[in-house]
Image (cartoon, rainbow, N blue to C red; front, side, top):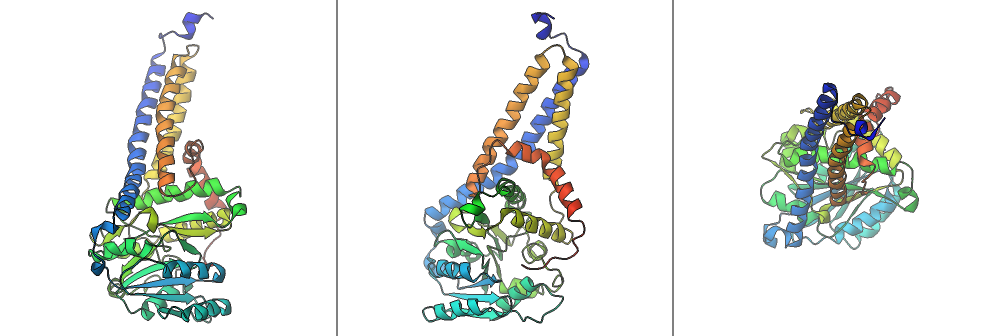
Length: 401
């Protein structure tokens, strides 16, 4: 074999067709993926800039009173920190805080009682321990709504922390302008160094960013279909006009997606993605959190009033098609290295933009900055989902942990 054969352009027609098709598929992947990543990244940048420039140029008098409802289940240690974050908020209008516990929790009651001496706007109620065949999370939310005094309701959970004093202000600025639903965002945050170093942290970070790009991107494009119960707001009227969780009270999950998919529209829903408004969801076991979140998504996905986007699965399929075409082009073109060189250039043109854009998106969403591994995760995601569903096929019910 001589040098001329290695770089010969006298290739079989199939090699040219396969290489050209691989290039076209790569272009399709970029055309589908990059706008979806960029849409969320731009919105984070815009909302963050708006917050830093003076809370969207609204006067303090424009902000409405708000009831902050905190649902908690055996999370007393973190709850005290969260309540401290809430009472440190920079908000010009009246705020009441309602803690709803899962049954009788003496430690939580002691914390709330102690803090009530200083904060007269702090209240507590609890879900009856003898309730059966009902979602305890939805029951907790419903009790919180019934106990509230104000029209504007803002929800979070006892395992969360607030990143800044601007959370309430950032969420409520949308409701002051007429929104009935405001979708916030929570960041999966390790509780300590041990949690941050666990093996499942990278996959957890990828899955969190991927699903967030999916549902946040849809909401930004005025097609909301789910929310994040760690940072979510809507009005009392919307809750009562739609009979609350009456059609899904027996489903353990769904307070932040089945309900939101049913009541949110392109006209009544806003998205808040400033980094100061992002809530930290404290996680001690990333792998368990990933399993629990996937189980919940799998269950509630069947009951959403809108079909969840399937584009990410299609993009993963295109990656495999591109890989198969690239390998076929290289093999068909042998002994010439021209197809290999062409495929290498196409690969760099495909992978580098995706890795760079994903890194920017991860940074915007305050997640782990995956770069080199993201292409691999995108490709194997359908296989991981299939294996996970086979392993979890026996799950019939979900309890609020």
